[in-house]
Picture (cartoon, rainbow, N blue to C red):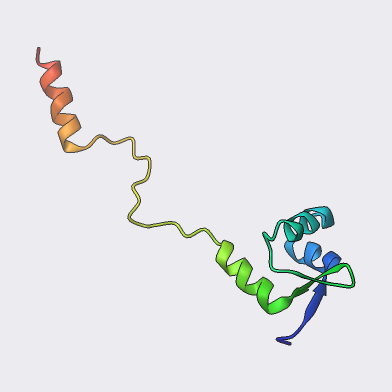
Length: 83
């Protein structure tokens, strides 16, 4: 249902966080929300988009912490050991 409106407790359950956390995030505009007669409401479609935007994408070209020295480092170490 694209126009599904969720309450604060429902969003807290969906995100598996405390209701106070969702309340604070809504107040700080950290999560898409709106108020109806002073109570926070959340559109499911907006939350789904927000959740997707929060995903951390790891760059496969980012070097990992590889303890193996590069060829240049190995050559430098070898020349120092010769002295």
